[in-house]
Length: 289
Image (cartoon, rainbow, N blue to C red; front, top):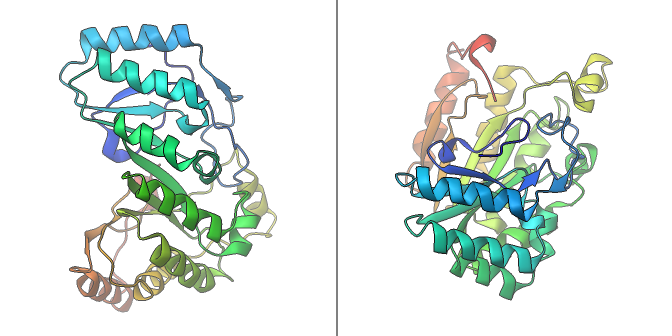
């Protein structure tokens, strides 16, 4: 496979075929993200993609899911996206699900009929980085959109029949806006009603603008306990809609997961106990992205 640079994928795609169709991220402005700092954005050549498909057709017959890397495959022009998904279906007929990261901007740039066509051709899952529903925070971290646009993007993808996993980032608003961020994020999630909520915890990376802000004191990172309180505040403001809830990413200081609304109260009680008992949390040396 022609992998260029570091390849990143969601934890749930660990056993997927990774097909790199873009190099880097088309947005590339988030102040906290160090993933693609060394990768100027471009769409890979069709020849390179075709060669990777031929490799996968020969050597990846046991893998039934496929992930489109890098940052946001939906940036591909519509005709190219149709061609790509059609070739995956023809050359890898055993693949039951295609997934991709997707920016809010690239979802909104597609027509409803186009999103539906992608779903019918096998693109069943999108991973959308909300990070926060707090508009001042979204602006500060360079997401380029407000919460209302995130809501529309998620609703349109879900209306097309896609499974949408939304990522939220503890600590991203800093210490002073922590609870505002938590409440606003819950309010946006209530309108999105994604199939899955994935909670990660901010890790300051040296190659990012946010790290520089932290060094100069312009950004104050909440303590691990404050992030627990932030998460409890977020969950307490969620409506009882059906979703998978995961706070078990390697970046987190703790591991919690369940299905809402069934496990809503159980997870709140677990968080309250962690906070009240000052329970030992994962050491920094074991956290990772």
